[in-house]
Length: 449
Image 1 (tube, rainbow, N blue to C red):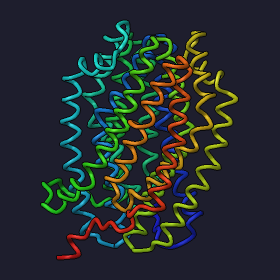
Image 2 (cartoon, rainbow, N blue to C red):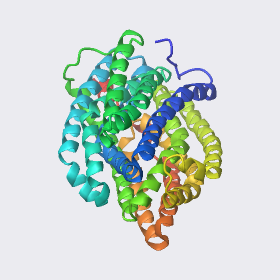
Image 3 (tube, rainbow, N blue to C red):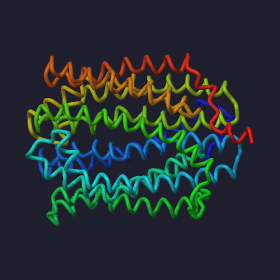
């Protein structure tokens, strides 16, 4: 695997930048995937269809959230295995994640398909887009294994120090989806169904490409799947369950926010959906560095190099603040033009523009959360980060958004979310400085034996 980094030696700043850049481009491609979907759906099918896929996105994320959380534990376990030089343990842990995550993805896909009506009813989905959203969701649930699969392969590669190869898989999905969207939506006249089928076909192709490439070219030590032994299952449970609950907490919070947004009607939902496609660009540096520092810190924790772990956190904060404020400024001054790419309804554009301009300069504080949480998660502090996420979403973000939107109307949505970013970063800094995450030993049982 010639693309891999050994983070236990060398210049940390240089490694962080060059390891992060491919992750950033991968995330950009992921965002462009949704961006292209929204462009085709919004312009070919209108604001109702755009509102439908905007409501569907957090629902899919909610159903997938537990799997995504368990998948995030892959970074912690495999990066520490890599840092400690335990090749046999790496193979066993990798097999365990493959088996457990495959079972979870199939199970949750079935559950999501069956309970689509109940989920949309709970969200208070507007009646005029209920059936459209339901149709789009159910098709996507059928392809959840593909979505999980190619993202999991990318996570494994990053844990091993390779952030370049996953670009190939995501690029394949983006190119295929960009071609299939207009073909299915317009030429075949399949409407919202066409957008959904284009998505799962593209993701399925990327998954197969990822499996073939990672085994034969990148030499990832995948084995024929077999049921993992007790200690690996216990480790996944100990780290994966709280990591999964973290993501469920986040996704449920996002869904609750969307329920608040939905109470203002279809046009606000569509405007919020268009803005969400754009504010993901602001969040890309945070996602990127969160994943990068997790891998980097994990390898150094596995080797017991705690001074390097502290330097990783410090450099990550400096980098995220510099980049995030720059991107926030660009988004702020071009908000109306960017929102107009998705929709041509004046009221929808007005809300999306106001939301983006209000929220833009709050996002660097969210970046602090991602970096510091990435470092402490690398040590195995999954339960602690779960608590931080509960505070962030359910004590701060959802209540503040509800209260301020009730007080200020639809404009209060952005203020509630933004203020919660600032307060959440204070809690993240507090735990990083004073918490006992450095004392966690995820392989303690093996050492004792």
